[in-house]
Image 1 (cartoon, rainbow, N blue to C red):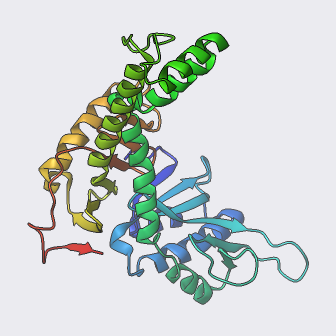
Image 2: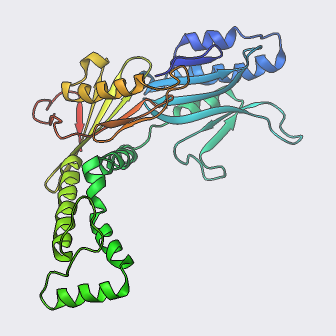
Image 3: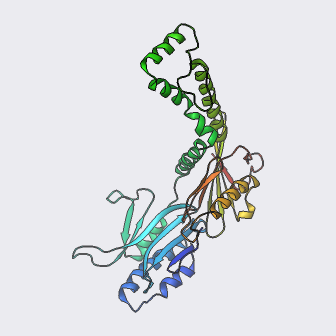
Length: 331
């Protein structure tokens, strides 16, 4: 998690943020009116059922400390964005707090946005903030880990082998193509491989067997890695949420655990995170917002504020045996 800059706030939902909003240049009416709406929203957020799992990212005007925008995160997920709406027309002129949601919350458009300047309505609006469904988290986890697995050198190199075989045959001259077809259809080996590839040279039939075998090996590696993939999501408060997607035969389990600190994380996960930490230490511009980092076969970091880690490997420990009855959810 990157550090907050001078005119930002990154942290848990508490009175520190309320104080900062109060201590702005309140003698300026536009600042006072704007920040008052954010204060109402933040105070309501302090009583949200998910409060302990949330953190806030707020941006302030450099001089007046007027709040320009505020985002609510549930670990690595941005679940709500707040801004100030200025109504157009004569019937309404007061500034309104505008809150966006991860799903539709009303029938009228925009369906995933609500606005109000009424304190009671703002309190209700804040209470309707929800996290992403676990199914969406898992879809995101699988999409990210699949790309990491596809990028494993041995997998990446050999998955395209069959395509390479047919491409080389395609680009051979027509006479050579006919000779190869006649040989194979006549029970022969197809003759010389048109263009030696990956250090292999020999008959077309041997090449076909070679590339198919490598393709099947790559698929087997992928399936082995896909049996257990992990998502790790952290917060500025030092807490970590670990989501495991485990496939055993035809059974799929999702195991979710919350850990109070990085030191409390399971050993099998810490190893991958350490590799990613080393990769991050080599960034060219570490003073900038944290960049995304990818290490094929190990994991990736979705940087900035999200602080999402997607991990792959062959030696993850199945927690279902050891942690039954502890702080986990299996579905």
